[in-house]
Amino acid sequence: MTVSTVGAILLALSSTGIGIWMGEREKRKAKDCLFFFRLSCHLHKEIVYRKCSLSDCFLSFDGISDMGTHEKFLIHTLAKGEYDAAMAEAALPLEVKKELAVFWKELGKGNILEEDVKCKAIMQFLKDRNQIQKEQTANSVKVFKTLGGCIGAVLLLLLI
Amino acid sequence: MNVQETLKTHLPSCLYCLLENTADVEELRMRRGCRVLLRAGGILISTALLCTDDLMEETLSLVTDRSFYKHAETLKEGYISLSCGIRVGIAGTAITTGTNVDSIKDITFLSLRIPGCIPGVADPLIGKLKQYDFRRGALLYSLPGVGKTTVLRECARFLSGRLLLATALIDTRNELSFSLEHCPALTVYQSYPKAQAVEMAVRTVSPDVIILDEIGEKECAALLETAPSGVPVVASAHGKCIADLVARPSLKRLLDEGVFPILAGLNRKGKQMEYIFS
Image 1: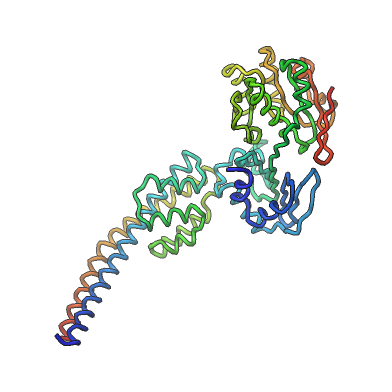
Image 2 (image 1 turned 60 degrees about the vertical axis):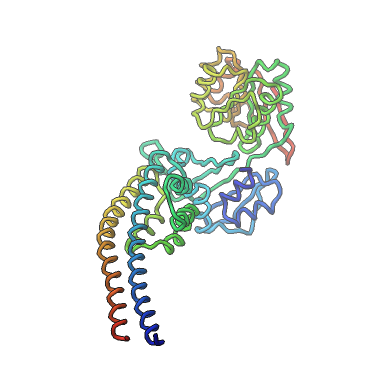
């Protein structure tokens, strides 16, 4: 096997790999969207019905939900009030990040009624966005994986 | 969590350093745009630190745990209770409906009072109560900030910890019961409305003595109601002299009924507490 053949195979593999990676990134967006939707529901419940402090609200979500290290990091960063750091780490579409940034900025600054309204608004927004993201992800993952695989195969054929 | 840890958690680092570097701080006072003041030994001291808008916002965010809604009820009454008996007094612009305060906005002033434990500070009062075999009540009066709460706390510690007298402590603002965790004969009514807690204590926990801070009109009515039960009450009220006390009709009635045979005025000179009994 010549060096060019090995190179071609490697290129084809990387192209397929990139396709898979981009697909996974889309999946993570959907996963994070769902995560923030569930978190907003939890915050609403804890604030309105239990009047817990924000840090307790976030940390109690850690206990009730089965989470990976990424989600745990987000929760503990949010609990410390480091919203910007959490948003930088979260894999979310830009518009969701912007909406959440406004929500974090205002969260905890009003009375129970105001917090109720804020939480319900963000819950609805995330619910809708979650649905859209779900559909987008299902299509994008297929597209990215297929495209990556196809480009890889074409490159392999051309180079060999 | 102890007082130092609570302060570290609930204050910006610059304010915490300020407190740490000054001895015997009793109070920290901040007003937007002015220098931060500290009270130590009863005297206000100006510091070099300016209370900027950012510093005020950060402090408010930390003392409320970024959760204003959690403190909405006490904020209406102008304070926030932190753990370890620390009380944060807050003033700003009230949002009202008629005469009721619904909420508070544009907070411009904040005063953080740090509780003190002075062993033996209540000894003269306890001595007086002992003369009556702990069967009669006492009213402690002084101007604000002199140390009524500290005296009542030490009194509760002695009565319920040493003498094992069943003591009901009415602690509406979560500052009176600080550091009294190891008093076996103590029943703490935390965050209850005072008047309601007095009636509840008499009916349900058979106290030998009831201790409560800063009695007002509602509490006087409740005390009058429960006076026939014979449970002695040790309470405090704001006032410079007895004339200030009797000027309030509800308090005058209590005094006339003999609920408080012991009247103890408090004065402070530096760290020394003086009692005036009558």
